Amino acid sequence: MDIPRTIVLFTYFVAIGRATLVGAFGIKEPVSALLTKHVSGIARLKEETQTVVGSIDSVPYNNDVFYLRYCVEDKGIDDLKATLAWRQGEGKSICDAAVAALAKATENGKWNNDPVRNAAPNANKINQYITPSTTLTTTSSQGDLVYCIRAGLIDDKALMASLGSVEELVDFFLYCKEVNALVANDRSLDQDRLVSVITVNDLNGLKLIGGDATFRQALSAASKKSNTLYPALAGPTLLLNLPMLLSALVKLFTPLFPPEVNARLKFERGPLKDVTELLDISHGGKDRESFLKDLDALCY
Image (cartoon, rainbow, N blue to C red; front, side):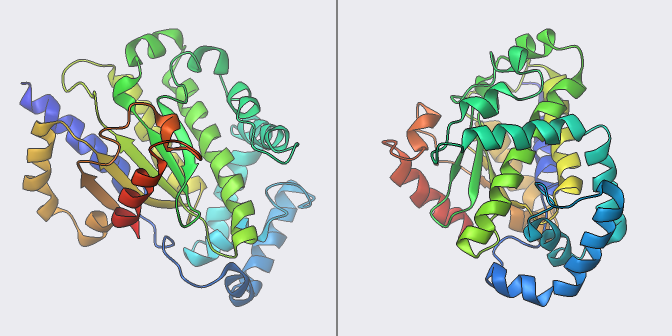
């Protein structure tokens, strides 16, 4: 076994978890109370947004939860301006596509995932390799979004060979994050609780030797960038069913992590281990009840 490469993989997963460290997950106050508590801060952020984008009557700027997330994480005008610059610049096509896709996905009152998949950046290439069997978003028992990815089942070499650059895959993952953020903001108002996104990395089938390093690079870059663009959205990151060697390394190194890292980054065996098809943990799926039970034990 290539130990140095294994340690690189391990530190890569830790980096992803470190990028999701936020203080908003588990806030107990109702969103209605939080909106009242932060009303002046939200007003200032709205004023700044209007000077940059003009009208704030459209998605996502017409939802006060967009601004509330900056307030609960103590982000200020400069943080907002950096996000708006991305939204009006290199990220504009991503954000516009997500808004249009979400409208189509919900136009009949029921969720239709096809418009979301089809509108993703570089969907004609990436959707051949990233399917609902390898990447799926569902909900937790508490109403948070749960973004599951089985990287070990993705033919990363073929995927990256089909793309022109790492940035194309980064854009794809940021689009997924934008869709989840829009849904989370809407549901925060509907549920009167601040909805987060729990990330579940199921490492079954992960190759410790081989694989495409640029695929992992894209995952890491998207995770790091989204943490800046989407404050107070990320919940815990779960790394499930690690290969045995990585599990041994976890036991050696996790005591050295800062407490806040250990609080957000959870290594476990068991959840999803016996789930063959990710669609079976979605609503009505045969493995959903057991998955939610495991998830509750880890996150709540």
